[in-house]
Image 1 (cartoon, rainbow, N blue to C red):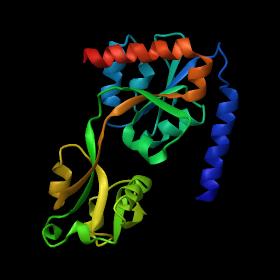
Image 2: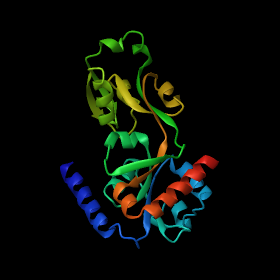
Image 3: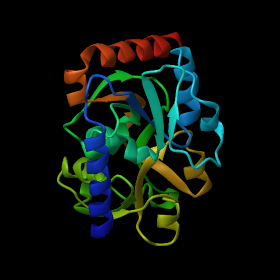
Image 4: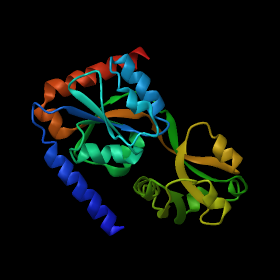
Length: 240
């Protein structure tokens, strides 16, 4: 794991050096793969941005794409990686959920605009049969499966509860069923997946939407361009 982290950091350092925030370089917008992308692309169209046709090809190995704006390219990366690319300067702007921003708390990132897409909630959930038998006010230590260990620890620490976090990347609902833990912290949209796996929501942590995020240095060095994009995305979000 340490080797992978070091390799990733080295890669981002190389990209950041290549993408110095000079005034003539093409701006890079990092977009998240998955469900949110289906809401981001129509929003971009309302902002007057069309991405090259290859972007729609899910089998394409291409990672960087041109747009109808000569000064803007997009890259498509994993949801959690958007914030990292923007924080390290590999991208000037990005679209990320405030769940990701809360987890990493990068000081290099500003989130000036709520795009009002990707609406869901971050919840603590537990097996249905546990509810009513368990008093959250009496917890002193809990074991929780989640891909948000930092948010989870902070949430429980606020009331003096120590959270042992088991980090998973997906299939969170299986953890209580297979005895890995009794509770999970995960994003919930409709609640259908929880219900199908015998889980219920027991605590609300945060409401989540996707935000337009910007690199703090990029905003200082190229304020007119960055602010122009903030305004265009804001108009598109309000129009929706």
